[in-house]
Amino acid sequence: MTALLDAVAAAGERLVAASGRRIDFDPRRALSRHDDLTLAAPGEWSPNRHCRMVMCSEGWMAVSLARAEDRELVPAWTGAALDDEPWQAILAAAGGRTADAMVTAAVELHLPVARVGEASPLDPSELGNCAAKDGIVLDLSALWAGPYCGALLAAAGHTVVKVESDGRPDPTRLHTPQLDARLNGAKRRVSAEIDGAELRSMIGQARVLITSARPHALARLGLDEERLFRINPDLLWIAITAHGWRGEAAMRVGFGDDCAAAGGLVRWTEERPQFVGDALADPLTGLTAATLALEALAGQRGGVIDVSLARTAATFAKAMT
Image (cartoon, rainbow, N blue to C red):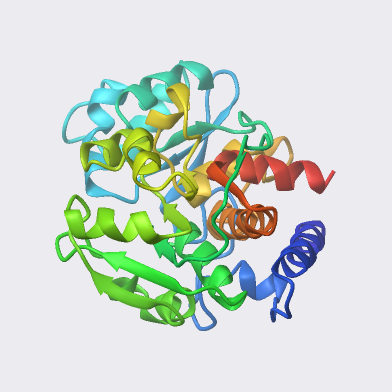
């Protein structure tokens, strides 16, 4: 954990330098959901007990079953009976199949499953020059990574507007209100339909857009690259995803724990991978995304910054070696 905290501290120094102002950054607090949340120690299971390391006939995978719809898909993934206990069904199937085969089948079902160590570090995003200097930050993201990026931009002095639809509220406010206060307390909250003209008008006036949905889901709401950059050619779009914004990776689902494992951000004990923290890919991605955004703003750049949870985790795992 010490090596990780050192890497996060170094990333925090880069963030502060990019912001051009003093930001109170605490590496240990940055990796915590909130101060009084008691979770189990990381190990074979993630601290929230939603994600588990699973040994296959060849290799390891991390499987998240936080959502009811994921548990319901386990029989289709493993071939188990509908009434079999999900984790027992996964363990039984994994014993006779490779991690690559299990992950490939899971991805086809849009399950949050990843092979341990599969991801490579982030590549620099290709950005263009732009004329815009000022403008609000629109935060359309939810949960932890995207909102943390927005919180850090607010701490750096930018006006951040968190946009929520009444039909798609950020569950953080309901389930973890203290974390919501940390991530969103310094933002102005507005309600708008995600697929409505009001939001597109706001995007037209924004300097930065933060999203955390897959590109095809946003495109169904009218928020595709072609349309949004036609509305606002100078937009800086922070696209946070599980495994990547483009190509086949853009279709994959993932959360902070399985994506941390995908990036190799684990510790090995007797040749078994163990989690090292709580959903670590989330805060690390929020920190990285905010830093890249600040650097792009300082250089008057626009375009899409592709920052995924899995590849961010791989970036930090590499920095720790």
